[in-house]
Length: 175
Image (cartoon, rainbow, N blue to C red; front, side, top):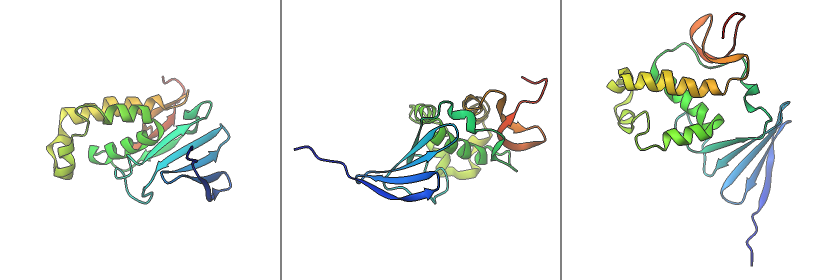
């Protein structure tokens, strides 16, 4: 006898989104956009009200948009700080949702960054001032986020505010 998975409509999240419970293991939020459909799969149990990086491993995002990165236009991910302690968790959380293949490959490697001891030491860890941290932030994370930028856009600091990091339109004469 085959066991059937039960699908339960949990409710409408918004006029464009619906949440469905899949058996006892997942919630699925389906959102219609102008570009296509985005399906967010949340493994139970999850806490959507927790701050990153606590929820980093709880959600995976599968996008069926014809061009998923089109939605990242002139949006800020972090502003008013340039500290790696603030930027790296925000960028990793964003990548865990919007670029899960990259995130899984980097977090699952033998020596993931930031190292686990940094969480124990907190914001005062010497790692935040290290070359390894600078390389991870400025090369690996920025490059991964820039890959999500649509044509004519880049990921980096805002032209008018160096502490505002996000996806910005390339101005004439740049590229």
